[in-house]
Every structure is written in structure tokens, then in C-alpha cells.
Length: 172
Image (cartoon, rainbow, N blue to C red; front, side, top):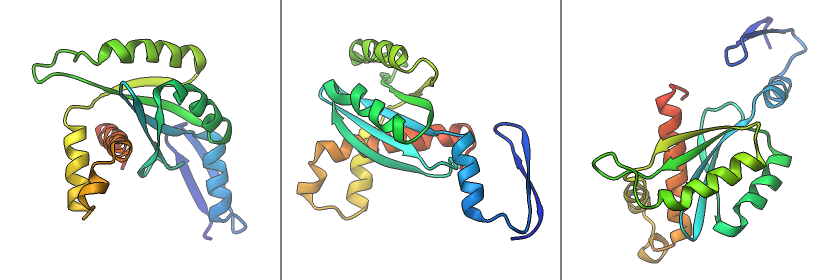
């Protein structure tokens, strides 16, 4: 690898690379200084989850878990992978008002903040994510039976929420 400097903008640090520095060292450095962003599509029965890679370049579906299992699932995940931010899907009506689903999301967010007080939390408009998820599955050539898999729809919806968030902050 060439000698040079890498400016780590998110922490405003400058890191020196030498001829001995390789990509795995760079990735290890990034992993130690920067957590993933994790998106949550919270529903009444299931929760779709998606995460970024450690460099915050891509959004990937992680899993779909039952509502009563989500905090334990996140605790286990965070012990393995650092998470710096939660992006919660914000259900809005067409007129911009909160949807009825907020009555389920608010208590969850309180519990999430209580359990993980050091992880930043932001909301992202989730209007049309289910429609976009179904369209992505159709465009991807999934069979009708696979498109009816609600767990898959939730995971894809969380991925769309995360991708929208990343685009909104210009992290591609």
C-alpha cells in the first residue's frame, strides 16, 4: 500500500499509513472507532432490522424478530458489533401527522433509550416503505409465496429506512 494520509472525517482525526499498513489494519481501525447504524422498522408483531457495514457505505437487512424479543436481540447483537446510532422508522400519515402506530413505538423507544442510553437515536419517515419493499421483491423476481413472507417485508422495509437515512445525510 502507498504511504499517505487518511482523514477520518467522522472523528476529525488524521491517521498515518505506512507501507506496512494494509486494508485489514484500516478496517480494524474503523471498527474500533466507529459503530454501525442500525435501523428499526417497529410493528405490532414483528420488528425488521437493518444495519450498515462498518464503513457506513451499504445498508443490509439484518433480521426480523418478534416484538417481545427485540431488546434482548439488540443487546446480544451490540455485544458483538458496535452500534453508534439507531434509526427508528417514523410512521406518518399522508398529512404529516403521526399514525396510530406511534402508540406502540413510543413505549418501545423509551425502553430502547433506557437499555442503551449511550447510543444516539433518530427518526426517519417510513411512509411507503412496505410498498417499496413489495416492489423490490417483485422487481427481484421473487415468487408470490415469497412475497407474502411478512418477515422478509419487514427486513426489507428496515433496509429502505436505513438507506433513506444514509442518503439524507449524504453517506453513500
